[in-house]
Length: 195
Image 1 (spheres, one colour):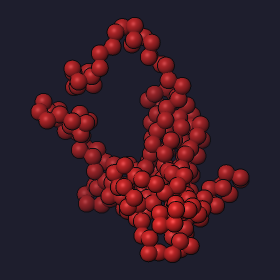
Image 2 (cartoon, rainbow, N blue to C red; image 1 turned 45 degrees about the vertical axis):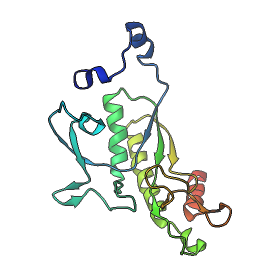
Image 3 (spheres, rainbow, N blue to C red; image 1 turned 180 degrees about the vertical axis):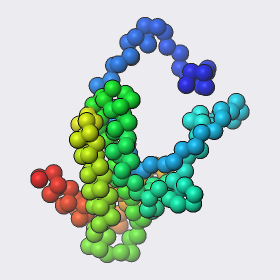
């Protein structure tokens, strides 16, 4: 990273390096999907985050997606990836405490669907169920996972999609003073947590 990014990295004194080395309490990780990556050579022009990673990333391999597409154009369902991620953290980074700080799926917002129908979010239930099963396997394989947070508590503004998608376990009625209704996924998660 130092040779690739050079003067774009912040400068730390030797004392600052020593101060921050191993200073974390836990690792917080957002996981939604997995992509394939192919190495590309470094570039010295028009450098950005995307060129810094020195890889082409794509959800496709030989024209086939890594998993089912969702209503967000960058999110494909690949539950095994969460297992692979926590196992990689365990194996490569000396197994720090890990919290999955976001995991979930969005669905397109369609206010013409009656609320009682829109609350039936079986796709979200399936997504969380499959991911939690693979996360449990990662824990059984020794990953030091301490917590899991569903993405998200309620439908709200998404930084790259605005209000065009819903991803909460609570349905927000944007036409009725932001009134909230639990989706089926909220009841599923409640039962899951009480097991």
